[in-house]
Image (tube, rainbow, N blue to C red; front, side):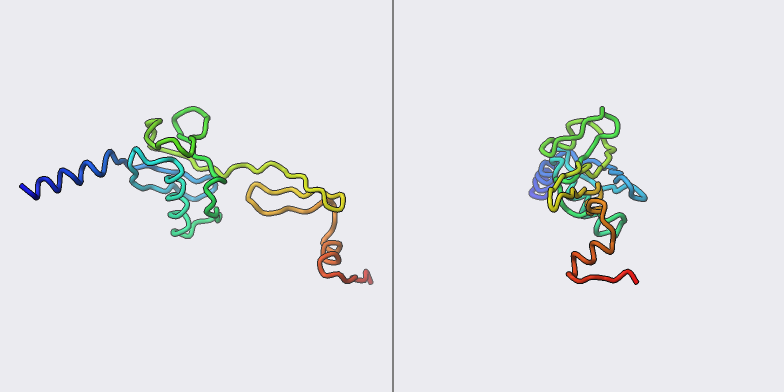
Length: 144
């Protein structure tokens, strides 16, 4: 009788669990794992990023949850809210996108820098490598 109560209690604690498939934009294949339907989207994104990194997949995404949006592949075009439960839309297939970063104008020496969607910094203004090197190392490179 005690054994039956333990089994019954463990089933209640698990809740409704299901297998989800998350396709990461730019990755070779999907990531699959089991979640509780009451788990929030932010926790699912975190688990996805950890699994992605543990498997050594490319491109490297990072671990900042605020940089990503999760979309249900069969429900509209709106991203899921980070505080929404994963089972709220009834979907089992999801798409994980890195948020597009808008160009940021930083006015330093009259030049604007752009942040690329991948998170790296692109060229600053219309300068050349030689000008950047001169500025960085504070010495002049002769042309010949």
